[in-house]
Image (cartoon, rainbow, N blue to C red; front, top):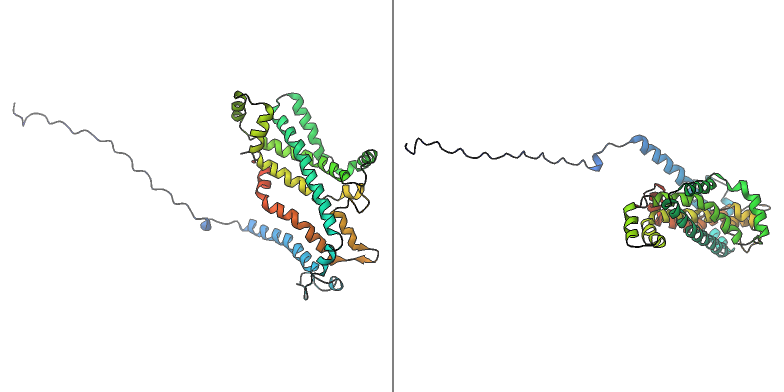
Length: 301
């Protein structure tokens, strides 16, 4: 048989790989369709918030004889800082220091108690811990006005009336339930595998609390700090009921200094409101993301 008649080997078939589809182009953010209803609602809400703030700032720069005349939305024709000088020279520093002491003490008490309570509520899996947690959260449903008379009697028996402790302790107590609720939601986001890994290394519960739970719960802790500080800074009922003299007076009660028998010094009153709101507003601007993240329950992730 000749070589020409021999069957030729067929070439091996090569597998044809399918060509991948072209990547989709992401639509740019400015080409997305907007929501005009939400945009209109945001503008309306922004106007509701900013218009009173503008009116307050404008009135604080106006003299007292012109405060009640004209349109409050018009800018002051002759702005003056005399109202701020009046506030700063009428004991504003003393009021500010008392309020800062109350805020720092309330934050320290709330953090020192709510973090261990939330950790125990998350890590202890039995019926009694769940029942104790639910009973503890009943404080969210109890308004301060409903228990102000028993609190007054208790503070009077403890000889704490007309002192900063009479303001600090009730304020911290009423800030605890919400703080524990926020921290429990944050600590539940911590993976169980991390606890088991530390337990296998021989870590104690205290070590797991301070080296694992607390670092991973920074968002929730920041939320609790801001919430407790706001409760202490803006509190009015407890300072009004449990203090009397000028020694333990705080900023919210200091506004009464501009209310006399013959009228109200409105520009000075609004100037004191502006000055008292600057510190807590600055704290909020620094930690606003942690506040929102902690309230959404994602602070531990």
